Image (cartoon, rainbow, N blue to C red; front, top):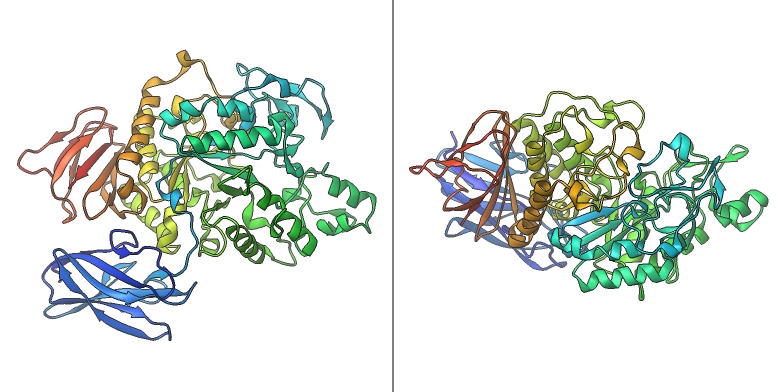
Length: 611
């Protein structure tokens, strides 16, 4: 029988430094109490051999100094706990008498080049055409051009987007970069420190994934000068800027593609994949021909050269902070070959050589572990580790079980507390612990229905708990524009998630907006704990789970509750001591004789602070 408690997490709390240089001496610690005689860390050395390092006690912590490996090497380790009659092993799977395998061991990667600023950031995603019109002089006009069987038509911000079959993605609301710049004060009030903009390259559609010029900001958005101005103003206000780009394909009106079709022997023809007598297209969409990275010249133009498309915007006068990489796992991939990882490693090395703290975040809806090893992407749009899990907590069917693009999910049995904890840990342990702090956690986006628009399951109080979870998880929370005011939309299609932002404050959900502001303040007030602090998850019962982030000095616990009745919560972990305060909208009953016995009102979640 085990008579001790032990905790470790790859975090600032237990690893110093958390991102060691090659061959740097590093302190590993565990927090432990109970009946045991000694603890040691068993670690893999530079020769691939395993050695034991005794850990010495410092208060409740036990520590050992180890030397890291050469750059890029994985250093695996686990802890050995000796008790009177048994030897125990502590790995990512927990405490067991079984010897851990390498896969389940903890690990450190040396010499990582990562954007440390991401971990403490709060991100806000903007679909530029639908946010704010700040310069009417660059507005596109009705009938200005035709494309893909449609004609440009414009709308006011009081109208709603048309379905694709009617609009052909040519229904412009004329939002632009000046409009975004004009709302920086609004974003600061929300606690936003990072912007993620959907594509802004010159293109013909409202979504702009059909670039016709990677080297030019769309004039309908204000052109290059508007981007320079926006980023400068954002930086002056402590806001970083990440921009979406699809280097997997161009638009069918890109000069390269027009030239390739005109002359099959031209250099441009080498930029695209042929498929029989035609070309390969992303998802068989005829307006999005796929680029062929067997062509060395294309690689140079897109990312290798100093004046390449991706390097241009990192340098002055733009000074962009990151790239969101559209359909990233599909890059360089056909039925016959896979260049995907080769190209992303080159992109990583080329761009990080220019800007070390650049943020590279890839779009991947599944487990992106293969790309999150420190040599390709820093993070992913973490549907797998946040959005899909939290939407199930609300009782929504997983989109991958839905026909088509997953825009009309059904209601289903919500996850229990145990299932939430298992799901979160499942995603956390699939990647190196050091990389968890750079994941872009999100509930919805331009590609999903807004959770708030799913009337079959939506409950605003439960939704607040969902958002609280997003702000508590390692990584940066990404808020889709308008969620904070309960922006309207519709289910059933991607167009339903791209309604124009409402700037009529009389139509805002003011209470929800204030809650988002509180969450933004939470991130700032407890930046140390919520950036690189340790993580511990708790399943309190079927209708409540906990996310605990803590440093050596203090801890922040979110108890996320969706019970329709009063919910009794017992906090019995040795991690909890010294309850200092709690912050909620309503009131929590605390047993005066035992601060670890709480009763939550129906649907209400709570934030507790421990010292």
